Length: 85
Figure 1 (cartoon, rainbow, N blue to C red):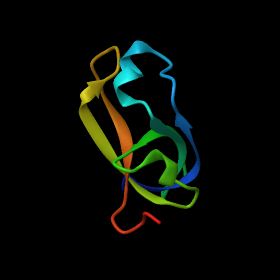
Figure 2: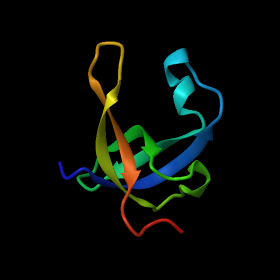
Figure 3: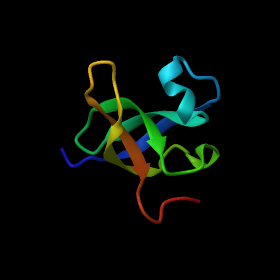
Figure 4: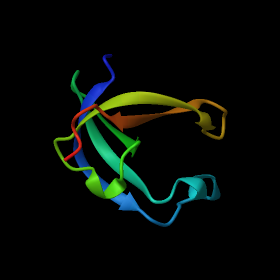
């Protein structure tokens, strides 16, 4: 997989669903269509949450400091260079 995708839909989360997410609010929770076809649920990082919009090109990024309860790194997406309006 290339790791490249496009935001299908997004919303800004202001209240963390669990204590582990408290350090991240506000953050963008999004559906991303990967170039290879699948649609994934993820977070968009590296951009003001209010600027994320459908059609925005993004790239997968493994965030090693932030891990799930089993210690596996989580895959977030960042905005591809030059795509912020």
